Image 1 (tube, rainbow, N blue to C red):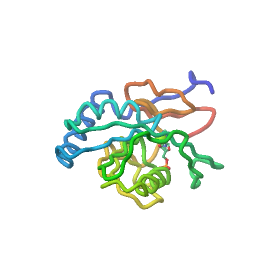
Image 2: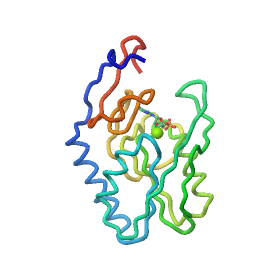
Image 3: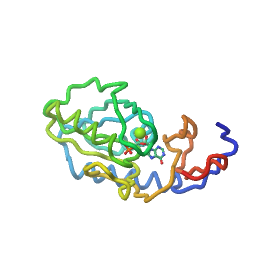
Amino acid sequence: MDESAAILTPVFTAGQIARRVAELGSEINAAYGQEPLLAICVLKGAFMFFSDLARHIENPGLELDFVRLASYGMNSKSSKHIIFSKDIELDILGKNVLIVEDIVDSGHTMKFLIDQLGARKPKSVAVAALVDKKERREADLEVAFAGFCLPAGFIVGYGMDYAEHFRNLPEICELQMPSEGHF
Ligand code: IMP
Ligand code: MG
């Protein structure tokens, strides 16, 4: 791809993200109090959100783990075949689990993960998503802690990529590639 041809339009600034992530941390603190909590980062897209959010969770019993999922499908819209390419390492039996994801779009990826982790008998499973594209939802699931809601558009930055590019941007931008049309 030719990244230099990309048109990046800022959607949320670094300051807006920082403020919203701090608010989400407060919501999570209010919901769980001092109850033990295991936060699971969905790699790679959530890595920056996860590291910032974790610093706002005031819970001495907080544990952190990481999962990576791979999906195979004909296109990005169809329901996909999803596998763990990296599983978590901690035992979740009887624990409150908070899945931390970059974007919930159709919801198929998150539904798969909730079902897989739910089968391991945690005490609870909830989802924190930086961006909730809830108008596009196909799977039935609840995002308990949503940073921002967006109806449409393909976004990159603050951990999120297009073909592994743009993850390092400190702000969230909408991406258009002139040669490839609109997302
Ligand atoms: P879902 O299974 O349709 O909910 O897809 C969710 C996954 O698609 C997210 O974890 C992202 O990795 C990816 N995704 C969806 N929308 C975007 C976007 O606008 N930018 C970057 N990745 C996206
Ligand atoms: Mg993702």
